[in-house]
Length: 195
Image (cartoon, rainbow, N blue to C red; front, side, top):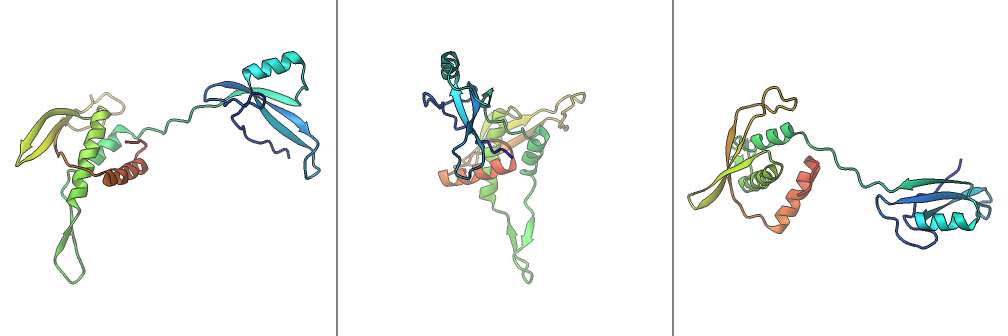
């Protein structure tokens, strides 16, 4: 079985980098000097200019060749709107209390600072994705809030996420660089987007 190397993304003749979406030529040449003694084919890549020059000059013809292009990286699949909206809705449900230990009745409430950070950051993402819009800012008890609203899609829409128009109050919170890095990693693992 023939083993053919992957592209080096460089022109064999002029050593220029072959960029994404740039057409180039790949050619296979016999390589009788392989260490194993087995016949092999050597892949060489050429930019379009060098390939034309080489062909016009009548240089050594390849065993085989093809024109190709380096494709841009594929876009990650988008997380459906209803998943994002359901996740955001769940952030506003009351935290459940969990006993600290089996023999005590002292409850442990989930980390409210983390939950506030997630709410705030996710609200900003949802506004950027045009799933929520800022209705008005609000200050209450020396805390600033974003008052956001979302609207249900018409029932005839195939990607209806249901429910009536909703309004959310999200407290503005400070997020340190370290906390932001951690939240970015969590969000990128849960959903297919970067922040």
